[in-house]
Image (cartoon, rainbow, N blue to C red; front, side, top):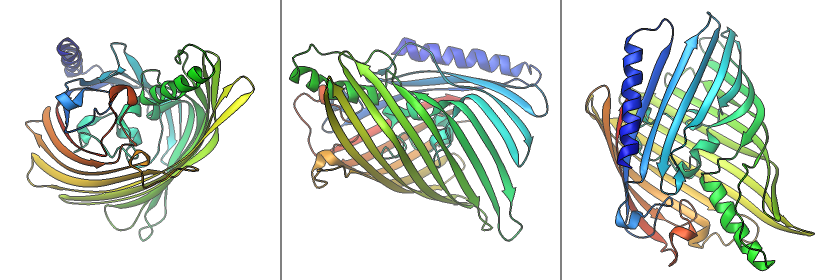
Length: 391
């Protein structure tokens, strides 16, 4: 872990030296973070957090270049370790070309960030957020590398509505999204299919080829005439298919919707989001089709205040429930309620620290059976601490 962190810091420092050389229009940015997680009960995010875990290392470097006044290209390389997730391999978070015709119309193609809600397309930039962990009901850290981006094309732009009506910003996209083999969703699928393998008398097999499917959707946000006040809505339609040995699985196309609002004025910030995600997942073992109908409903409300130039505090409440067919939503395995208090201190323009306490009731998010062989307690307090370097 320490060698990995040193490698990330060296990569950032070397890239920072290149940036200082002013290589025409090339911009180089990056970050490296080291986190610590401790939970009063249960092991969280596949790490041994009940004993305290430093298995939370993250880092990325991005490069972009303006080839002309209208055309820009860029790429971001990423490496992370979170418990069992991630590893030493360098991933491409995004790599795209962006052609902006004017303020009203632009095109983007390649592997681009998915516009969804307030933070999906910025969750890979830790330095811009107060929170060590964004609300997990909507932005699950164990699946960040999967939800962040997709392969395909996007059209975007903005429309002025007049001084008294504000402006509309829109983005529409279509493409293909592969699932991260080292992420949380694949681990959940592996655990679910292991039971089917056992039932049909087959040895346990794992997902070894990245599942994926076609996607399309869009995001529209209204920058209201009230300064600092924004509201918007996103929709994302996705299908998925894959296999693990003799068992196949698929996700029928389903529409995920998300509404959001934020207000920022001076030192004060408040935001809220609501998400609905029906999941028509099924496993196929020979002629037998086993449905897993899920209905994920989540929301959060957050607020923060900048106490001083270098010090910021905040709190949020995050709520999640799986209201799928037959689920008893009063049982702790079908919901998660997380009240969080957080603080951030910026030591200088490059280094910062975060300290956060989560009071979690429910076990539906972030917990994995193989990390908790003795079962789960319905409540747990989770301490998240993080130091970061960015440029």
